[in-house]
Image 1 (spheres, helix red, strand yellow):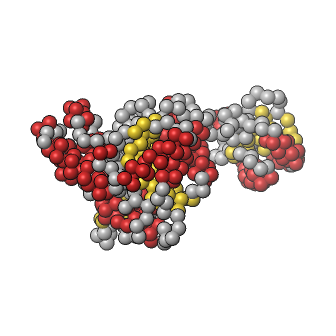
Image 2: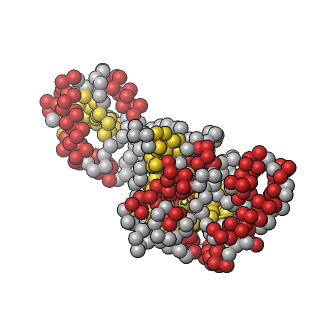
Image 3: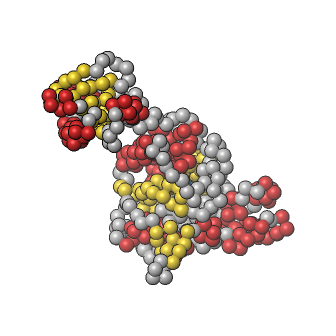
Length: 423
Ligand code: HAM
């Protein structure tokens, strides 16, 4: 679990702001969800034979003895909230959420135990058009960030019945080669054979390549859905590859699944992933309701932006550093700082707190990165003036009335005279 330090938060805020703007431009609304849910919600929704439920959840008993879990993902909670508040009743919903998720995985670069997702769920829409919309939306995000080289992988998992038939064929195939299966795959053979297809073990690749292709088992409706989606993507000029081995690590998917992948982040190269989950809402106690969504991993996205030097400069330094030069001026300086914030829109003022001589105050002023120092000593206080000291080597210090200072600050800010590093 990581701390995000003040030197990094401007980048996070920028990324979150850009994503929010894109999601809102497609008509998606934010939903804010709890970080803990009853454990059973995830067991049922994600599936109890998945890695997440089997070994990665932070589960604990609360003081009433109820089993709760820190959310490992957002879809199950979003569906729970939508059902609880009647959001899916006779209407479509386009929702997004952001926040920390928790998985007790083996940490490595790009894989953390607390990580942050921005997730999107479109509920109540059955056609491939909404699948395409989600892909367009993510592609737009990458364009907006100037990212290149993220590849879209696409697959269809078909209907539950088709998947069941395929599952039978897979079990037969792998069981016939039981001696070549690694330990993980042997365990999965009867609980979650589809996941064997996802194995990264080099020793398993030949066996996996020889497995029957799912497209021999896909149902007609899913095949049609997939082919219309592909047409829409092609028309929009979105490159993709069909990866028949893309099965996803959560059980609720059917039909379309997709991942955006980069090879520049090492082993954890999936920055965004999702798909259709037409069965989950009914399985969670609602009416049959189609749905599709995705989540992107902010740590991975940010690492990629940094690796490609696409992140903007850091936080905007203060415009002004206000120094009360004498203990008797502190209260007046605090008051002045407040009124400057009232009167000069957008002004960023940092007030020197904690006393000290002129020299040490000027040192702090310099460290703050501010463009101008504002000095308030006993003389200025008596005369109703302030002294403006350029801290970045532009011109000499001068003393002006407060009204002049306000007018000058307004003009300077409006002219875009911001401190170095300004965003
Ligand atoms: P997921 O594939 O489990 O899907 O996670 C989505 C994204 O979260 C991943 O592609 C990755 O970028 C990021 N992520 C996952 N685990 C970690 C980790 N341990 N450390 C850092 N980043 C991580 C879901 O969670 C689904 N709820 C997505 C979805 C929404 N499907 C339909 N609607």
